Amino acid sequence: MPNDAPHPIHSAKDAMDALAGILGGALPGSVAAADDPAAALLNDPDVASAVTGRLRGPGSGAGNDTVCRWLYDAFRSGVPELQLAVLRFVPTLAGVYMCRAVSRKPLAGFEAVLLALYAHAAAQRGAGEAVTVSIPNLANPSPYHDAKVAPKAKPAELEVAVLSPPLEPHGTMRATRRARIVGAVLELYNGKLSHMPVSCKMDFCEFCVAWAGTPSKLNKDKPQQLQQAAPDAATGGAEKWRRVPLPWELFQPVVRIVAHCLLGPTRSDELKAQAARAAECLYWRAIETMDSTALLATRSLVRLSQMVEEPIPEPSFSGAIENMAELEAMRANILSPNN
Image 1 (cartoon, rainbow, N blue to C red):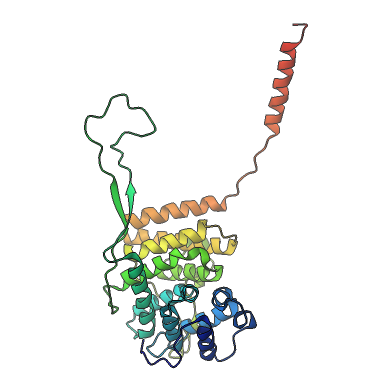
Image 2: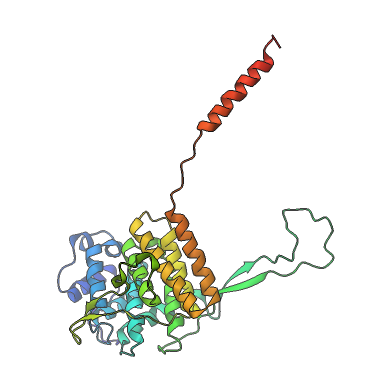
């Protein structure tokens, strides 16, 4: 973003004043007068709706977009609470950007914010550091059982799987880097997912359905929900969120976030239903592209969603009580002096 911002953001109060000027009115008292305004902003539905509405609006994401400037400056302020509040808008930011980037529209505002988030993720991880996990090698004897025959060869080394490759520094957004940069931003968002409100998780699942571009077999009667409509001044109709390319570097963090929405500690049935729909749409997309890794991950997620929907029967102890009574009667009969 340009460096001529009229009001640099150095604190939460600066951010609230700047946001109030952008939205054209004073922020609600629950945010403006809060002891921790950044935390209040994170969970305030009215302000969040106003910001996401601006991000979804026609012409948003351009180089002079004031909301994108605010997100950029607020995140670069280095205030952890403000950075968390900015991450709350990542689903809408990434969702609208990926859908519009396919049509090659100029989106310098969106790209500046995404690159700032990507640079922060790369700095957190360290130069050249990949996220890996060790997988036990089945060629080694089990540590929980005694081997009948002592192994003659030395134990095989553990398998190391790469969850996320190293993040190389990027100062510009290109089509060949787009999926990697947005995927890294989603990984950053996923790391703070437990702090995020339900509404932004709902936004993410909605864009997952649009990104997949495949109808859900569970909602044949509601195909219009596949695409979120937003006013479009150019056409006079509605902007439709587009199907986007989903390489594994973008697909993997998407599946991880949807899995959290579906299986996480949230009590929102609406979120779980939306996450289950997103998982199924991603599954059909994986079938279309014949991506075996994505297919295995989404099929497992769909099966887990079906298990979540099935009610768990309450355990019945009536049979056990009757058996205990019968055993006590047999015991009393054995110990009787008449026997």
